Image 1 (cartoon, rainbow, N blue to C red):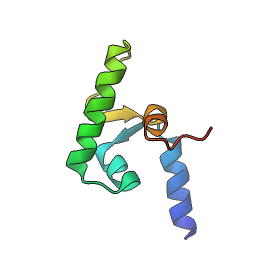
Image 2: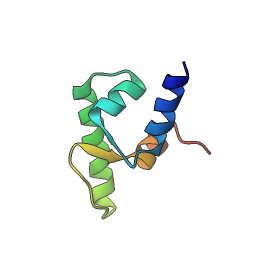
Image 3: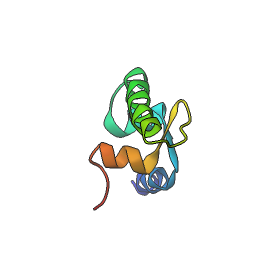
Image 4: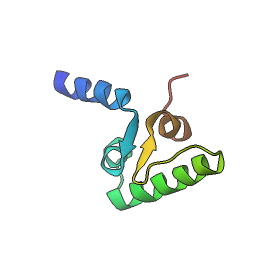
Length: 70
């Protein structure tokens, strides 16, 4: 149980999330997670941010997914 909590803390500390991370967080397939990453990266690119294919800024993902701490 404690190991699971430590993994959640480490997950929150990550700067960028991969499709595997997103898949675990929201319980979807990795292919769907990749489509989420593409959509969010497109949004960031429109705002002139530098993006990394296959990864998404963790803070932006948590905010857009409604998982951010207020």
